Each structure stands twice: as C-alpha cells, then as structure tokens.
Length: 129
Image 1 (cartoon, one colour):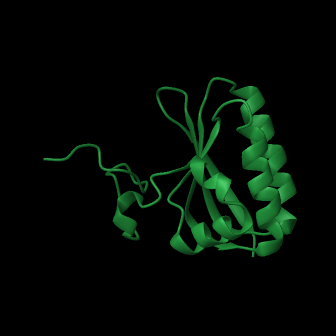
Image 2 (cartoon, helix red, strand yellow):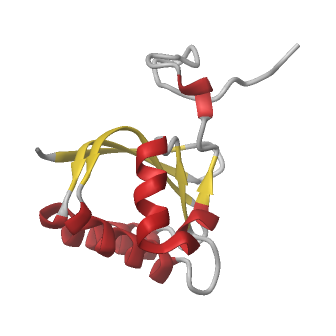
C-alpha cells in the first residue's frame, strides 16, 4: 500500500498535510525527510498531519513516525496530528504514549466519513449556533 500526501497552506501560513493510504517502514524515512524540509522552508508555520484518510499504520513504520514527531517537536510544537483514528491511537499508546501530547482534534468532523466544510475538503465546522 502506498502513501500519498496533499499539502495545503491556510491564510495564516499554517500547513495541513492530508495523508492518504498507508504508513509503513518503507514510507517513514522519506516522509520524515519531507517534513524536515517543510519545516526548514516554513519555520514559523505549524504543520498539522491530517490522518483522516490514512488507512494503515504498520508496526514497523510507527517507530520512525513517532520518533520523527518527537524530534521535530523537541524545542516547540511544530507538528501536530489531527483526525487520528482510535485504532492508531492504540498503536501510538503501545509504542510511546508521549506522542499523544501532539494529537489535536482527534475526533474532528464527528468521525463522519465524507463530512465536508463546504470547500470541497473534509474539515472542521466554522461556526455553531
């Protein structure tokens, strides 16, 4: 299973990386390199990894992924996780519970597949009555 990522920048300069497919050992190292380059090119941006469409996180790739998140957030939070599925949270907890501090909005969109923010992209509600 391959992994693809689509990068979007919002009006404040923060970046969301929409991950699709699977994250395994084969994809972990190139993904780490891409994240490091993204941070170097955008040092003031917060990068959110949207895992909503990630179907698979392999046990062999999780160690590199967790180490990458911890390394990149060593001095300050630069990378956050969003829309993390319950089964992936369990894997993170088994490997290293500390990475959970980086998870935000783990249940965005009420876990409703296909929720749309009106812009053609899955996303948070913009207001509530």
